[in-house]
Image (tube, rainbow, N blue to C red; front, side, top):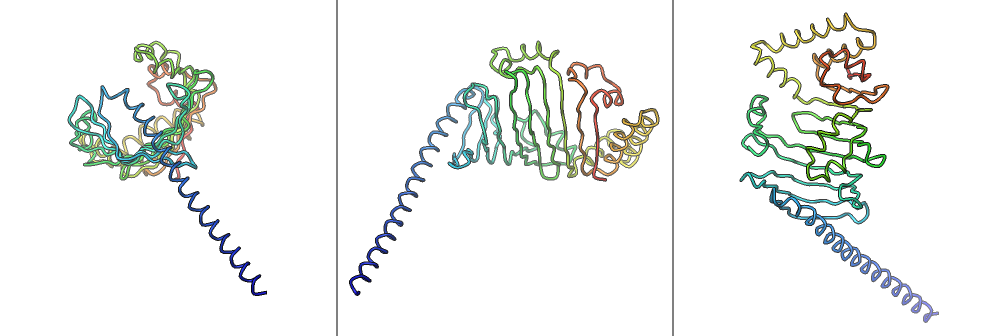
Length: 307
């Protein structure tokens, strides 16, 4: 009986040792796999940015790939355009999904975290005067874009485009464009020329905007009031009166949308705008529109707030 207990203990200890060894092997395998994936991702990323090194220098601290979700995390990116000594700083870029079969991805989802914009950064199209007028000394933006190309490069669907910043607000867009040949435009050596030729044929079939304000609307109203030499309360009242006049001359559908717009202007918080026209509307049509009521009717725009 004593021999059996000793033998049993030995078997249990052996099993424990095997489990421990197995766990160590799995951990080492994970580390090796992670290292291999990270190296491959870094190689692909370096190959991608090599094509734009003639326009800008790009540096980053680290690349990490989650082997389960396959998300790619690129930390602390610095972009310095050749035409400027100043740099653009991005805290993190996350690549969720990318169709690598094509030179121009037909599906792409990525996010940018902590994109810094300062008043003294002339690289960003001389934004300093506008930031100053809106009383922003520094902004930290987050950006998220997810799109897909449909119907043999005929349609571009922006499933989600989110732009958000503290003390500004959060805007989320959805957009579907027909006859927008993304691959043809971006692959061409004359992208601007091809785009100008295809622009008359591009049409919008669906669109939406969800916006949550965090001081931007009021700051913008204050800026308009200052330029008009009016108190901001007077400006808001004047805009509301102009919209009310339109309501009096509108059909029932348009009245509802204009009233929601008045509500947002007087109490900016959240607003949702959707457009689902009966048939796709060519973008060039917007060049001739100068009446808000006609635009609402054509695009079947619906506006709602949480007020």
